[in-house]
Length: 121
Length: 107
Image (cartoon, rainbow over the protein chains, first blue to last red):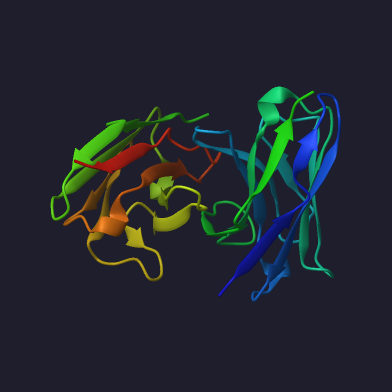
């Protein structure tokens, strides 16, 4: 069974930075696109960023473009999300999600348990 | 960007009843690139359906999906206690947008 384990969440002040990690196992990580999806407290799901299997192409939602950067290390089976210039509205549980294919179109067939990011002074 | 609107917002039903959830897209969803996810409190979402009507691995056959173009439906034929949750639709052909969710609660 696919395993995705997020880490790196926590409390950060507005304007600060945080780097999330997602350790993947029990599947061939380098063969699949990956994404980050977030969920603000009591709200719905919002796709944040995506990266192709090789890491050659990345995509981000307009709400985080220019502030968040997705990357991956296929040698370490790890997905990252570098979050800069954080705002209160970025407060959410961040999920790592495995794509069903190498690149679009793909749905999310496995999800991690999430890591909470709280942006507050 | 395609906007997905789910209805109703909340569905109050009893175990054993049939649940019908709707997802309407603002533009036609190409090739049926529509997925459904289930989320229980405190848990990560779980894939239920993809391609509008294909069940994901391990999903019981009381769950079924249908639709094309702009109108899609998720049906749970007979609600089990573990089915009370929030359900999201998602267009994965382009912008990866999610609907706002439908909560299925115990009546």
